[in-house]
Length: 210
Image 1 (cartoon, rainbow, N blue to C red):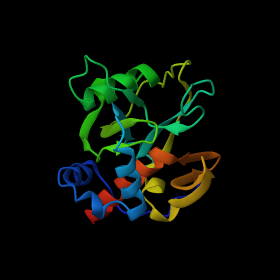
Image 2 (cartoon, one colour):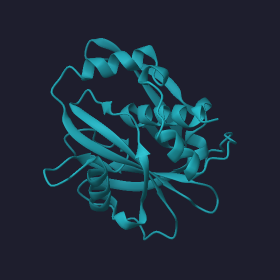
Image 3 (spheres, one colour):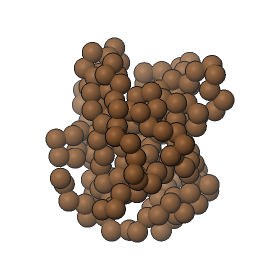
């Protein structure tokens, strides 16, 4: 396990209060990230939601991630938050995130306290994603990953994710142009793309409260 150098004490009241008073998006994103969001927003986007779930473990809070199966048509093998497309019967993004989390990893929705939302994240693959921030107290039932969608479920210390020193801004040449993206390597795990971008925004929101 990678040691975390982040030492702020963060509790659920800190997070809830900051999510209730979000700064302008321009204060949270770099110019490059803002331009990518504007570019993605010009397309017709499908509504979706994910759950950034913080589990208050005795050794320190963690965040839950999934590793997608290798055979999926989109984002195969990538690391993501539990979540997915909004369905017609979902009254709001919170319902989508909790329903999808139950389907994907077996999370009991009644064990989740919703703390708030992050700003919408528009992906280049055509989704308008609402990240929902939730809090859960142990004990939780064992994760039950859906074998069709989820290859693995794992947790990363919140302290590691909130340490800006672990946020890497990387680039790669893709489809004829240079692309820039956030990444947070954690041991053998490579958290990157939209998931890492949401985490960077989350860190900046929480840091603003301090």
